[in-house]
Amino acid sequence: MSQDQAPGDAARGFLLVADAHGRLALKATHRPDVGVVCADWQGAEQQRRIAAGKRQLLARACGIGRTLPWRVLDATAGLGRDGLTLAALGATVTLVERQPMIAALLQDALQRLRQVNPLLAARIEVVQGDARPLLDTPRPMWDVIYLDPMYPHRNKAALPSKEMQFFRELTDGDPDADALLAPAIHNVGWRVAVKRPLAAPPLGGLEADQSLRGTQARFDLYWSR
Picture (spheres, rainbow, N blue to C red):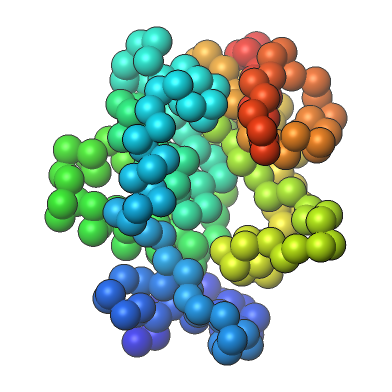
């Protein structure tokens, strides 16, 4: 079952289809050996993320547990896993995804969540479009802005995940992600949290005010200015 798609996406070889469970999924017709990708918000992996609670680095970076509900803008939503985790831990979250096919996966996941957990779904909004216009607001609309842009894959011994391979083809790897940081800092109520690989330079070359480091990634924090 083919769905609406953005101009040019079919030429890249991607289609929106229904998977075996009836969920909207992304299929690469030029990669017949690779399965489909969907936004699975109700699977075991997502439940593990939520069960990690407010002590996990993501929640600490976004200040979950200090005062609720935080208003969080996830400006690089992807499949929405981090945004959903923050919402499940009590925040109200706006997920922004500019790639129309990926945004359609998020809308499908949100619709399915409404059927099983309407209270959680009510704390999530999905916006399809560029995040930059949302950052140019006359007053801060969000307490926290969360950025998790794609980072060039440098480990030649292993391929990135299927989702990351698809997303890099569709988005050309977020080449303009650096441009989000400065307006985010100047238009956030409290702070900006940026997820980065441990060895990666800071986004846009701007040193963080504070960093939280884990075993595989770090969160760079920038206070509102």
